[in-house]
Amino acid sequence: MPAVLTAPLVVEFPFTRSLGPVQGAFLTGLRERTVLGVTCQDGRVLVPPVEYDPATAEELSDLVEVAPTGTVTTWAWNPAPRRGQPLSTPFAWVLVRLDGADSALLHALDAPGPDAVRTGMRVRIRWAAERTGAITDIACFEPSDAAPPATGPVPHDGAFADPVTGITAPARLDYTYAPGRAQSRYLQALTDRRTVGERCPACRKVYVPPRGACPTCGVATDTQVEVGPRGTVTTFCIVNIKAKNLDIEVPYVYAHIALDGADLALHARIGGISYDRVRMGLRVEPVWTEGGRFPDHYRPTGEPDADYDSYKELI
Image (cartoon, rainbow, N blue to C red):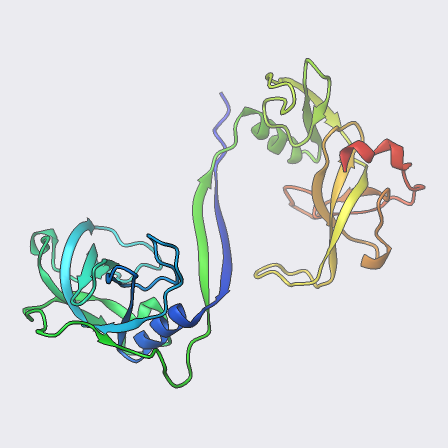
């Protein structure tokens, strides 16, 4: 039995969003060591604040300042912190209801061990040394003996100098990919610079890359068919934004290519031609680099363009 193929994969991108008056005031307040909540129609104070009442859907704007101390309502111990988490040593994830608030805030609690954490314990905010207007301005929570303040939340106009108007949050997913039988055969064929698909026994279509089953008929595909290596550009886009860690100058073209003999277009970069000369119907062939596990890009073959009717079903 051949060895199971696996590969570590990372999907990462920055997510940028603008902030309205409520979220902007909350994050700007954290920068200034001030915790703001919002008052709902029924008088409840929510921290973190939301822009719309969760019960009535009415827009909310009445901000109040709450205390930096609170009570743990529930918790879970994290014995092995991962990349990007608030603390590098074991800690507890806690829901903390800050004094003056009616909802709980999720964050990290710095504690020596799970025996030191309990529901109902009193905690306080440990502020980050450098604050930029983000939830990470709260470095974590820490145990506290402070009693709840005698006064409740105080109205706040949400006005600060140099308010935060937007944030960029990095999104990242690390996982290990293990292809199935069909894709393993496909990847192994690529090491020999061959492209193979699988034919559906019912509709007779050839799918590249194969998935092990026909998406139309729902039956297993197990007959291998070698396709290409040449193909036809069915549609394409011009990329004008340079990707991180990708050493390709913009603009460049990414296209769907129907390899000869295939009934499904795969996607690949087009090279060897100016981006403004790429077109639907362009005939292309793969270009391999030394030691490459898959074609680096596709380039024009010099053949006449394919007739539209020959690839219109693959767009």
